[in-house]
Image (cartoon, rainbow, N blue to C red; front, side, top):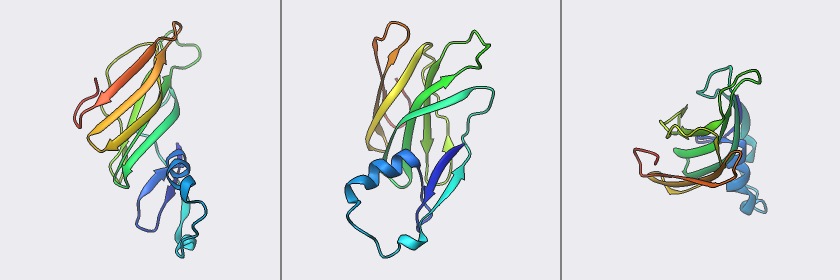
Amino acid sequence: MKLSYVMDRGATWTAAALLTALAPLAFLAPASAASLHWVVDQSPSSPPNSLDLSGVSCPSSASCTAVGVVLPPAASQNPIRPLIESWNGAAWSLPSAPAVNNAELNAVSCPAANACIAVGNTEPTSKTFAETWNGSTWT
């Protein structure tokens, strides 16, 4: 599950997105602050894997991308793999990401809904790993 923030327009943001997006505006106190509240939002991923999100970018309230790593159960021999989740303004989904084993994504930047770059590293060699989004596929 993710802790999310619902704004008065009904847009839901992850906690990381909220902190990233609103930190520069901390000195502004909106008159509608009383209408803001936290909600728990269900991740589209299912157990037994653990999800570790480490970065988020939201070019609009109807478009967010979060990245991280899928950690297999402790007793499993399965490798870690990159995690990418997308927000369309109503729900989170898991777009098909390249099947790269032993890699994780640490940060993402999306200047537009159809343009993202996510970066991370591979394990155990710690080589740089990057993915780009063109609006329909990650490569």
